[in-house]
Length: 352
Image (cartoon, rainbow, N blue to C red; front, top):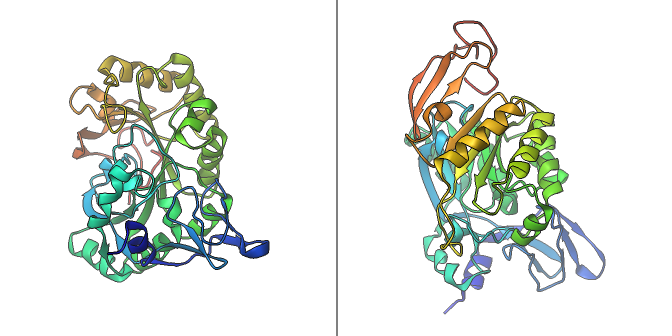
């Protein structure tokens, strides 16, 4: 019987986000770890590996594919109310102990997650896009696991999506290289990035580096991708005023139009004894974001309990523009030109 690793390696293909070094060593360029991988060895993500001097990456399958509201990703300023065909593979370059998708993300890194191999469905890009079109999708999202480590496969899917007139987005931890962003730029319309905290020490505990994520936010914005940022606010981890202020100030320095989602933590994975995030904490975080100059701040994971922080308002006149309840859009008053119908203020986002 084949092992989980052997089954996954059978669903892989030569990767082009790589550099060949001496002695058949390869340097992976998919994420900022830039793993130097010896023949027969694997990168930090465990999904990209060196076979006889050639880097291989996941290919030809999904571990999950669903049609969800775009608000679930979450995107608030990207075709509100639209359906997003969301697909994912397996693996991640981080090891967050609060990951809500850990069964998919921690395959080959945590034996408890290896059962995810049973979710795999071989599929072609065209078959996947046809499935999305049949179910009314207007957007294709790579999510669930970390999409950066499967970028070659995502690009093939996005090519098929563009032929059908669909928009494409990433839902990612933002641990990207400039090479990966440049490769994605022709296809990627939106990029949701997690800004997990403002402490580099704590970022390293999760498997990354704060500065890389900050650079990705700025580069993605400069490349013309629509960027939204999410911070999962975890009591005792990243909920201090200083942490939230620094995060908000940085986002405002990139663009005051970047939507910032501050979302509630629920005990998950290895942080089951953690404290849930209170509504008042999210409200405090949102106020900090607004005071830092951000025009669009949202609170999530507590539907119906955060008042107007689920809705979009005009930053100029305060008009209610998009009213929401959880992932549902109840009303959308933004004009076809992407402006406030009352005062004419341009509302940043992708509206048509």
